[in-house]
Length: 138
View 1 (cartoon, rainbow, N blue to C red):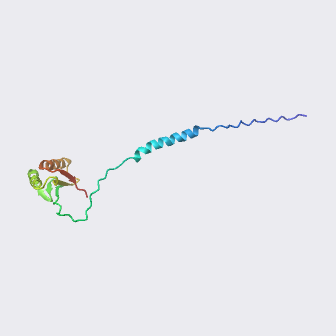
View 2: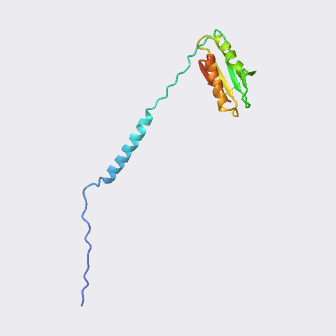
C-alpha cells in the first residue's frame, strides 16, 4: 500500500508592522495641493466704493465731450463733424473753459475706423489739454 503524502503550504508569517508607504504618498499629495491652493486664497482685489450722500448734487455735472470716429475716419465732436485742422484748437477751446480735474474726453470709435486715425484722435485730445481719456462701449 502506498500512502499519499500531503504537502502543506506554510502560511506567511503575520506582519505586525504598518506599511507607511501609502500613508506617506497620500500626505505628500495633500501637502502639494495645500501649497498650490494657499497662495490663491490670499488674493485681494482693491475696490474703491463711491461715497454716498442723501442730499441731491448742488450743481449739475458738466456736459460730456465725446469725440467720434466714423467708419470713413471722419472726426466728430458731440456728433458735429470736425475737420482735422480744427479738431485740436476747437477741443482746446472747450477744455480750457473747464476747471482742472474736469477735463475729460470720451471716444466713440467705429470698429471699421483705422487704428492710426484713432491714435491720431487720442494724441490730439492730449495735445488739447484732456486730463483723462475714456472709451465708450455699446
